[in-house]
Image (tube, rainbow, N blue to C red):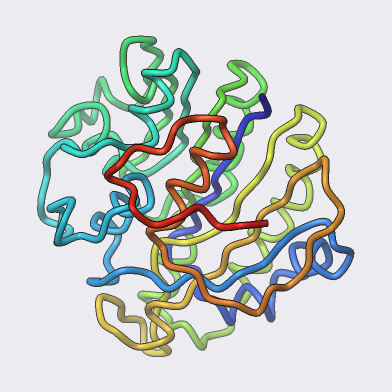
Length: 270
């Protein structure tokens, strides 16, 4: 069974990925990746959508409906399912993921580095500052992939959200941040493919031209999904929209896990 790496780029909207991420778009053109547009759930806020991505449920059902709710996930989620199956998990991510899947509230001194096989996230490297450079988050995730070979690995850079909220989703700085992430991925994806990983690149939410998110506009809700499978070269741009709730069951299927009844949306078909 091949492992899965999910790169969840916080605040990366669909049009920015299409226009600025030349490496990912090249893989689509070369039919070495699939591309969809994901319609995020509402509210288009980070913590509720972290939980949606990992449970396959809308916020009204999983119960995390704002960024201010600090508690553990109470629904079947990817980290718990992978762990229960005897597989290995990892995350290089913002501390809110620790609060959802390890312990709430986050301990800034002891929570930064986690290596505990009893936890749903067994190998974690967590950060607390929105301004943490993306390269640091990606490098920590790459280290986890090489050192521990987790079956499911989350890498969650915050740069798009940080720049977008300060300078807007139409700014040159926001576009440059997308190009930077694309260059980082261009150097990492071949390494991960050599390890046998299938790589998904998506986002929790987008951002408006003036730096806001939480609402129902296309710029806030439309985000990309790239799926790169090293064993297949029959990809392409599907030009279709898929619900965000389909991500969790899709990852379950890629990992060979049974999809729990709570994940009602069908996996995305390749």
